[in-house]
Length: 289
Ligand code: FAD
Picture (cartoon, rainbow, N blue to C red):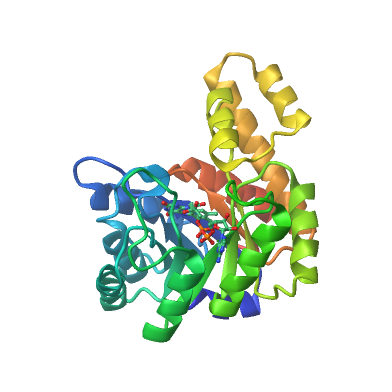
């Protein structure tokens, strides 16, 4: 099913997985996806070479198997920097043959040797997909604290409006740790006449080292209350990870109480994280089953 049609009817709940590296990554991903599918998410997204991993080959295959075999809708990510129109056409054909109807259209991070071929920005990919594959539902990324390269949040929201105008059907946010920043961003989107649904992406932090890396790669701010929880967890990795899941569940329930369009959990290929999020959202009444 197309995600925009689900969003017309209900607030959604979804997970992300990334293709594992190494041998049998499709089979490994399917074990994770099938476990997550037990939580009955509205969709599972599959990343495309996230973090510059170069692991792009299996995204369409994993998304197709999720769509065909788990009873869950798949959202296949696609980045366009360094890709030609022919590359995009081949990927879309693979998705459509596998029954996948949803694509998250992204630019991708700049990297040495990755120059623009046919696309410089996500809005160009969105416009191209809308024209050449009109049956696809197209998602796009948004940044409650502004994209790291953007000169200001206002400039980034203008770029976001271009993605809506190019035909994006819904948005997924980058992770953040301070919900107030999201609420302010949502108001700014209303003022900028961005009307498509915004699903909110939340990632539990797993350690002091990991959250610091996130802050530096995505520009996400770390509020004092998160720092205090990590101090309380001390050097114990298990306590740090537990604090991260607890904090993410609190963030999700606060967002649920504040009427978001959808909640998307960056579950880091960990079905136990997906389960904890689902339990928290059932307890606060956001998820009904
Ligand atoms: P764009 O929308 O093109 O924006 C990029 C920058 O250019 C922004 O600063 C924007 O303000 C600016 N800009 C846009 N249009 C214009 C214009 N016309 N003129 C001037 N400036 C402009 N990366 C992966 O490699 N694989 C993934 O699977 C993946 N999944 C992601 C999922 C989500 C939900 C998010 C939030 C990010 C994901 N990323 C992924 C990271 C993403 O590729 C990077 O954040 C990338 O740097 C920007 O992608 P974008 O689609 O937002 O780009």
